[in-house]
Length: 228
Length: 286
Image 1 (tube, rainbow over the protein chains, first blue to last red):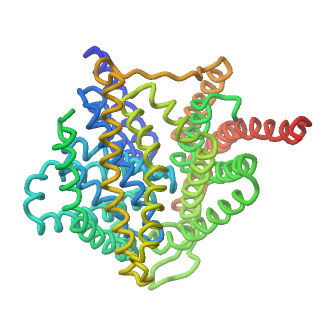
Image 2: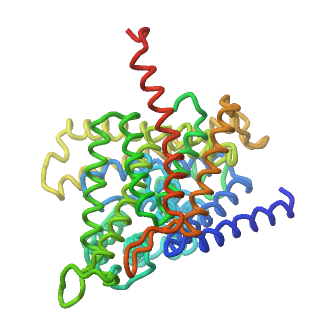
Image 3: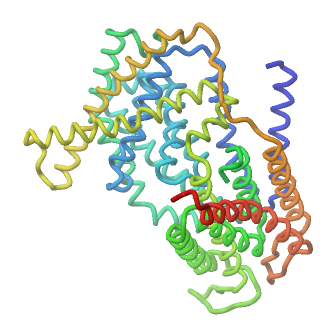
């Protein structure tokens, strides 16, 4: 794509976001966070589209996403106790930061086809994507230290819950109000704790298996980070 | 709306969603919620529509009751809660919020019935073929993984493993199944990668092919929806939004905006009703 066309596209998107903020009054914050979610995911997807990707990377991203979505479906009877975030973190650690983002964002998008798509989908895609990205960025440290991995999982669960609460407060209109946020946070405290605990448990449970399986893939087929 | 391309169906729902979520108008939120329920009724039957309607009304009741507890703006005081005013205006603001949120939920349910995930891939795959291929592969792996997990669980139970019904026993069982699925999915990924390489992946750019093309009626439909959505949003910004505080008053152009929005919502209703009627009256269906 030509540079001028890219610049025009970027300017058009910015104008659309700014126009929405001016038009929508007290709902402008909702528009802004929705746009931010779409923009962040869009940038990563555009990068993924453009860069050279091997068949192994694509196939692994697809199965890790499928595994994460299946985990959400299999564990559906246990509310807020799901292995999705753990699989996303493991994908980030063993497949790399960008693949981690891709697995996280696609998990939210595809699993919501089976549950419910909603106004929260872009925001959920962004949060899970960033979880995978961050796990990939500090992956080497997380691989070596189980305690740090556990803390990272718990923090990922906490951040997911808190950011979803922030998103809900903003979608309720009238801007951010501490009273509403506090009310929602207290109401969802059980879910937050459940996310944190489930992430720790699943990470500790699956990290060794994931390491063994992915090392074997590298040895036998030569696929994992950057391989064929 | 099967006679229209998936992009037209998506445009109809996105247009309705944009106005209901961002117009801040009580009349538009109400019209959008009802229109969404009618679309659901025509497309997926009465039971689904009643369920969605009941859930939506519960959300409306909750937001209408809860919002005045947090927002004390407004002149018409109904009662005092903890020495803080509980106002009619905040209650109506909460009702509008509930109507727009549940209306958005209803329209998203309509979208699920009108455009399936494969058709959605067809729409976005045009812009991002590699991503569409990844999503398509994922969608192919999910049922295989679910089937595999069921077979592994049955095999493990048949072998007498994990028979306990306690929560920890169930967690142990599901986790063992999930670990086995992880190993299987890694092998499946390796197989898929090798198949892709054998078919020449990486030797040329990934392209996208879709046999469905937009016809004149699709272009016309999308243009009308786009025009009505932009008109609705602009009218809302110019004074079509309901003023809730300090007293409730309808905006200067609120009725015009609601009329434009109703026209937008009626388009899919007419098309769905026509298709439903044609199907009901069709003598060839046996």
